[in-house]
Image (cartoon, rainbow over all chains, first blue to last red; front, side, top):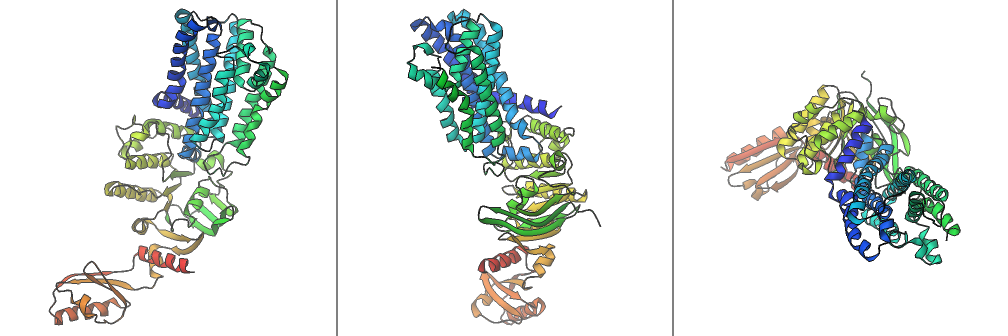
Length: 270
Length: 305
């Protein structure tokens, strides 16, 4: 069997054996989706409109930001990357395969949400499926590249948790998942646009549901694609085979550059 | 002369201001077990990691079959097999998956026969975390040799293993040597090095302070033979008599210990003394200096300097 395929198959299966990955890929996002579906639709009937994209983005953040970096850091700490290097596994496979298999898990969670949202909670399905699918893939790319970058730069598991929470919690509060972006004060909206979730949510609502939003679909795509490209490039550049970081030539602090497109966009989109 | 498998010339490695390896040179031939010995911090790990391509040398050169570990790519990866001290596999990876995956990356077909040969038959679906330390080591060894590399590196291969597993591993290393594989063995176990290694280098403070066959290294020491005597009434321990050719003496576990430059004369005199004093002999052992004693001698001298 081709090495890349064998590695991908192993990595996909391993997520079902690893309790923390199983939790972040399926149990947590699906559990929150069911709870919010039951509660939020009762409290706020408007939530049914944004429920599907909001829960898809929650699933993406759980899989790629909360689930993906941890195993990368643990593997580096346990000497797995060293063992891989000795046996000819390229750095590309070590970084790309976990992102790819997480995309598969994310898409499974998305399908579960899309299939059940309407019959269970009267959740509104997208009107334009093409752009909706494109934004879903863009979410996978954006969150996946950011998750891989966090996994590469985190020195240990505690730093990983801190960095992921730094994105996850503000995204949940300000990203438009729970409260529409238009309802936030202008100053807070500026901060919200520093988060990838905000751009993704605007893109989902604008292109997938035909709603008027404060950001054009093209702008969202450009900002997200630029950040993803920067994150992927930095992840490849900052990759280290072991915790001593002998193979790393650039400071991990350079990772902040990946947020530059969001920061720039925040000045123009308020 | 056979082609050299490993060629290390004036190799240097430093971490910041700390010099880990300070210009060492050695060669390893096909079918040879080369022991790397030294106390912690002597430079063994830095040397091994540079040979594995995990660290960049700061000076000198390292090559395996003429290939530079830093630039050899997949060609170099197929030349070496490494049994790491900590096995470094994902906790959830199954034994069979590990074999399939690593063989695929080496471009060879899966060697499930090795899993059976190394006592892991029936464990193909067990996850790495479910294996005992000994089983993890055996799996690491199977993965290291599955692609039949001309060089295998062992880093403390028997640490934490039971006697049976240790003997099995020794047997396998000897089989590899007979098949022409060159082996570098880094170990703290002197008896293991003395038993298996064809040649040894002792590292201290990043330099090679002794090199040669185990016999050559031990012979280069003080050359004193250790004589241990135990008698029924233990008169040797009590009366402090001096015997010919003895340069040092002491006691250990009811044994009187003598280090003699002429063991024949010393033993004859000891026996005659016991007989004259009617103290029946229980045990008498005459041992040439071990590698461990010579190693301690070298490292103690080195630390004093």
